[in-house]
Amino acid sequence: MPALMALRKRAQGEKPLAGAKIVGCTHITAQTAVLMETLGALGAQCRWAACNIYSTLNEVAAALAESGFPVFAWKGESEDDFWWCIDRCVNVEGWQPNMILDDGGDLTHWIYKKY
Image (tube, rainbow, N blue to C red; front, side, top):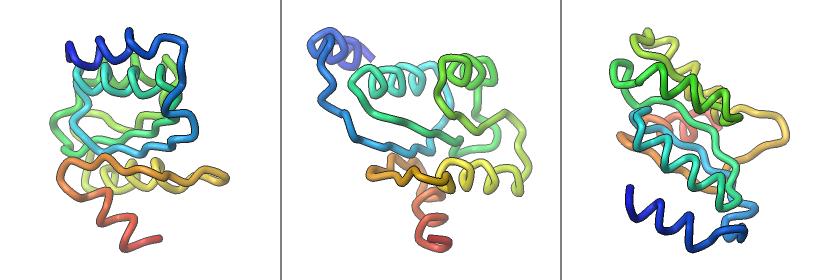
């Protein structure tokens, strides 16, 4: 996390990731929030789902959503909910990701299988 904070400070006001559309599927934790906020501060658009139905910190997911990040995750998702959340990250009219950040391969599998 110190590296992300240093990167944010170094690129202050610049948008080197402008045009990046990042879809992510990782554990939703405070560390993920710092990553997403850094990506956003650097100009990227991000959409996120959880890679594990039990690891989401609901308060972090809620804070990210309140900050304007599309986050589709909550602790204790059913298997159907899990795949619905992943699909909501990807299946957006007029928005196509150009980068995938995937912890576990579920998001990559979903994109390959469905799109």
